[in-house]
Image (cartoon, rainbow, N blue to C red; front, side, top):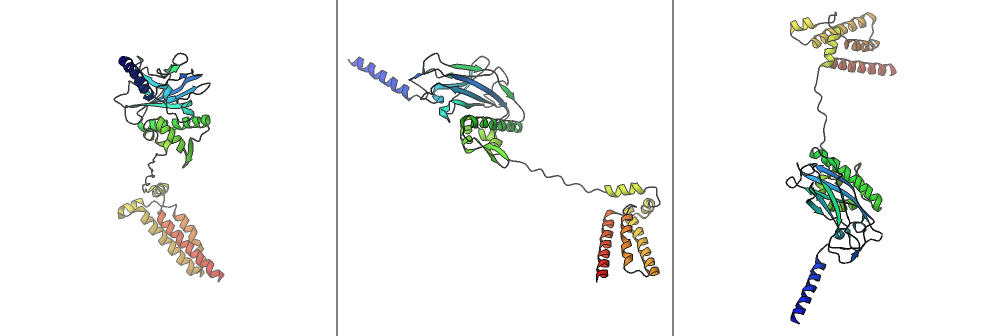
Length: 325
């Protein structure tokens, strides 16, 4: 009698333990109508040099959805070329208990990462502890899109990829998964809640998708001051009667300064003689404009030409004022 009671107690204890173990399903489970790994994208140097991130898109459907969520009934495995398990992961049951379309991701540090592009495959299988009506469902794929480059480049690619996945989930679930911010499409609050649980280190590997992006402002370098204009004028008059390079070199003064001094000295003498001979006191100022313009073509420095233009403008305004009043 004591032995029988002890045997019964052991069976009850075992049943109790099985109930408490997460992922153990005791009810009969129908076979899924659809069990697909739709896409696998691998990214190298996602968070640090040498690491690997595998993002898996799946689709699991039933004629009648089970009571148990997807994380209790299915397990995702990353396998090496010998079909040995590298990592295992359960899907996050966010929408419709995790069935339909969903995303699972594996992150491997540089120390744990296998050789890049070395016969890796991804498998999703039913929980072997479940009471399946048929055989345990399983599907495997070795079709993987490989992406590698600098960490900055990978973060941009992963961010864009996650926004693409979020947009697809938005259409499949009819739930807002993305939003616009500062002219960019990023994950909405709902999208962030899902992907931050589906993809390890989401904010670090996909800063542009999560709104954590930063930009280094690049200001245009200050354009160095040059005497390109002055040189062009010097070349234009070289060898002509206006070429004062030799006198300037002898006097050890800039050619432009010598040209401006001689030119406007002659212009001043011309105006004085013209005003005395024809008794012009007002209209003669209008003749200053042609001289200012002409001076710019015979080597007068630009700054002097500008100042001459200001003088001519002031004289013109003064003349108009006198005529009107």
